[in-house]
Image 1: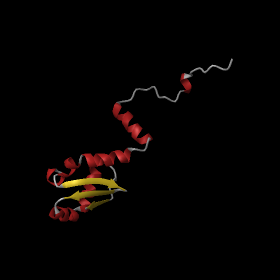
Image 2: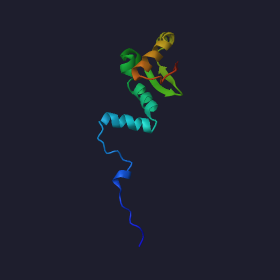
Image 3: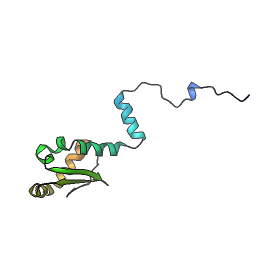
Image 4: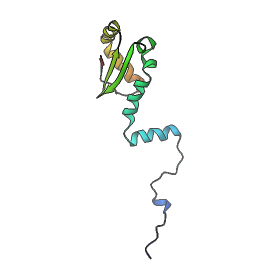
Length: 108
């Protein structure tokens, strides 16, 4: 007969220490390199809380591609006003997520 496999607890790669759920999720985001994608999704999902109801109600589409935030608005005057505050918006969003996720905002 062949050799029988025996489980060796000491050689196991699994960490048996209990972690708080928040720490476990953060460890998972780091190990799978998903943190920046998670923060991008946060920006899109919480656009209304970040920018406020007047701006979010005029936003028809929002997405992020290659560190650029694309925002489609249905109001030309609002688009022109936000164009002048572009750097302030980038700073506000990056401060909200605590990282340099956005480099530029493009209004379409």
